[in-house]
Length: 138
Image 1 (cartoon, rainbow, N blue to C red):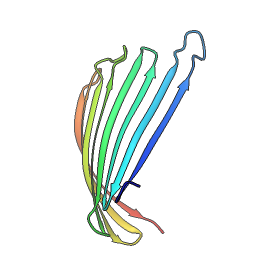
Image 2 (image 1 turned 120 degrees about the vertical axis):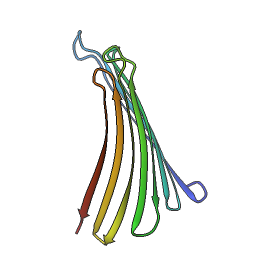
Image 3 (image 1 turned 90 degrees about the vertical axis):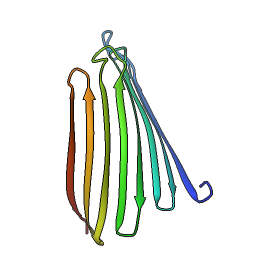
Image 4 (image 1 turned 180 degrees about the horizontal axis):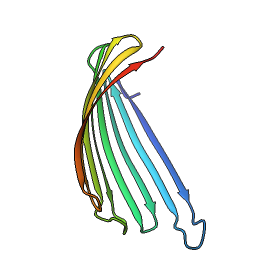
């Protein structure tokens, strides 16, 4: 707790050594911070994946969710990944999105999300996606 806010720190790491003489070691790490205050929750994350000099991915992202009322929540996020390794070294991926979730009645909600992405590298593509979901829990 930090005054009226709560702060959560998250960290994970994994290292796999060489399994054969021709294999490469793999290092993976993830760091996140979640800050919640009132109806707002901010999440910031950083990840890394390194496999020798072949792959060296660095990713970061942020998300914000705000509870407008007991029935309505709005969300937005952005994230970006790039590879500094020798395989597909020009790889970059960026995505942004937003959404809204409406609770119709306890146990029944509807969500609408929209996201846009852009990928550069060996394969270049971009696009937009809108999705509608009905969630039922009992």
